Image 1 (cartoon, rainbow, N blue to C red):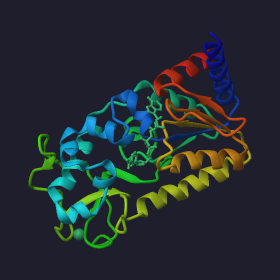
Image 2: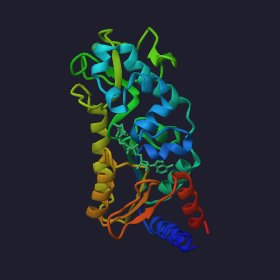
Image 3: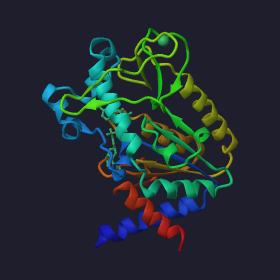
Length: 284
Ligand SMILES: NC(=O)c1ccc[n+]([C@@H]2O[C@H](COP(=O)([O-])OP(=O)(O)OC[C@H]3O[C@@H](n4cnc5c(N)ncnc54)[C@H](O)[C@@H]3O)[C@@H](O)[C@H]2O)c1
Ligand SMILES: [Zn+2]
């Protein structure tokens, strides 16, 4: 009974912080997509349940998300990324995305999204591309695998089709090619041990984000962080540091890792449930 009352208070505190803010910063990790049916890659068990063929090969997420596979076994490399590309293309973002967009658009300072997700779900939910920072890149953009890219081009993957044999998780020929030198292409995603990722697209997003923060520095910013884990803590560190630098309220929505710095708001439920409950409070 007590826990329920506490949760209600947390939801209304979160709604108040959002209602009283002038600008909205949304920070997101893979947990935001779980209610759209996407796996978060938490732990090997979760990953291998989503991808049994990789369990058979004994390959973990961290082993596969490595650019070396594009040299050693291009079909396997594109099996991993091609399968995810196809999955993200057919996924429909849940209603929580629409609520975040509605709140953000209603603010005088608007909104910005900071995410380590490469899945393009914010763009799919109609968030403005120029208000999104994808710190680990995007699966919907490609680059050349030649050292450092054969030039600095990053191109959209919209016309690229990758067919994956789901029993072996290997992609079938033809694999995506660089339009300039015809070598193998790869996603413009920052992988583990990755020295050839081209940062230019993310750097442009970073400079737009800095500009937005500057414009809103003297206003009240609400930070809503959703589904960001502690394993690779880039998103959590960003939301905590922005909350402390700008005196903003941080609302952390996270099922398994909801702990927050003192004075901030922790909501230990799923993304969709929390966002819908906050919205109910906001529209009262
Ligand atoms: N094994 C690995 O090497 C590994 C695993 C995960 C992520 N990564 C990489 O690290 C980066 C950051 O990871 P991440 O933080 O996005 O993912 P994560 O899987 O580490 O964390 C997901 C977080 O979402 C929370 N969550 C799960 N379901 C939720 C729901 N329905 N609603 C709200 N929260 C929910 C979990 O409690 C967890 O804290 C990613 O870019 C990814 O590429 C690597
Ligand atoms: Zn090339």
